[in-house]
Image 1 (cartoon, rainbow, N blue to C red):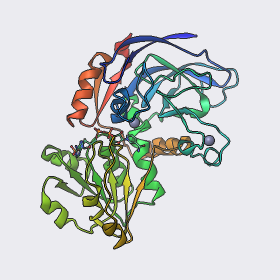
Image 2 (image 1 turned 135 degrees about the vertical axis):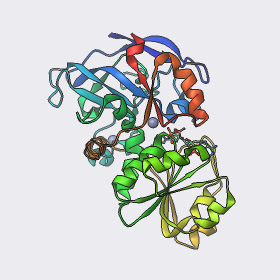
Image 3 (image 1 turned 90 degrees about the vertical axis):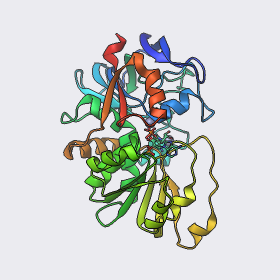
Amino acid sequence: MLPTNGYAAMTAKAALLPFVFERRNVGPHDVLIAITHCGVCHSDIHQARDEWGNSIFPMVPGHEIVGTITQIGNSVTGFHVGETAGVGCFVDSCRTCPACREGLEQYCEAGMLLTYSGRDKDGQPTQGGYSSQIVVDEHYVLRIPSALSPAGAAPLLCAGITTYSPLRHWGVGKYHKLAVVGLGGLGHMAVKIGKALGTEVTVLSTSERKRKDAERLGAFDFALTSQPETFTRLRRRFDFVLDTVSAPHNYNDYVNLLKTDGTMILLGAPDKPTLVEPFPLILHRRRIAGSVIGGIRETQEMLDFCATHHIESDIEVIPIQQVNEAYERVLKGDVRFRFVIDLVSLK
Ligand code: NAP
Ligand code: ZN
Ligand code: ZN
């Protein structure tokens, strides 16, 4: 076994603390990655605080992982030692169901094996990227293009693919108007990727302070969701609404911003349900849909797309010792737009 340093939540809502645990030895199909950077996703906070009710403790969060390959198993063919590699939200799946065979491992019928807070085949809990190293089967590892910086690429492994996948799935492009609700980690990636796809992007935010950021990111328009006139001015304007908000809120307001046949795509995962009114959907044949991350093939496609379009996440790099403070700041919307942990600080 491989002794590994990390930071863990020992129980729900407890502050994260230094934690030593063991990774499995490198198997024939595995690579060992010395982690250099890991993004802080809002899902890490939901899970470390057991807001979705399925957390496993002790928990080392982190699923936006970038590092350097330091060892490979005998049968590994796709990676070599010294290469920069990434790991996202899952590290295995059944590999045989129709979803897995289509490259949609995130919709695996047996359930994808989450990078952390999952239960591996040997019964051991998986542990994430707020740690010094990780052992992963090569089929679940991504190549980080050399045009991307490791720190700026890390958030692409969740925030990037979570926004890229639905935009591609629904064919969002040049002739569409897209509203992005919530300008956080996911939201700012949606603006960048939406813009690169040629879409007219409007940001809907609770924070007047983010107006300038939205402009800088290339948004066409910005509106405050606290102002009732936003919902009259933008009524029936959009083909798509991409909702990235992490807390419960009224979906019906946003449905009314869709054109006939428009689609509202839920990405944010609040811990409480919301009442949906039928009439705004019925009367304009609108849809509410959802989407979770993306498969391995599409994640690689997204990384290559971002390299081609010079897209990285806007980040604030922190040492691991500041992770608890970073969680509080994420909850206040006080980050532009993703904290990334520099794991050198763990040594
Ligand atoms: P984040 O950086 O905290 O961004 C969320 C944004 O939502 C905030 O910046 C804020 O934007 C807005 N917001 C927060 N609280 C709000 C409230 N009470 N009312 C209205 N707006 C509020 O979080 P993230 O990492 O982007 O993640 C966002 C959500 O997506 C989380 O629930 C996360 O678990 C989920 N997620 C889902 C997937 C998936 O596959 N579907 C993947 C990753 C994450 P403004 O300041 O602009 O209002
Ligand atoms: Zn995430
Ligand atoms: Zn499967």
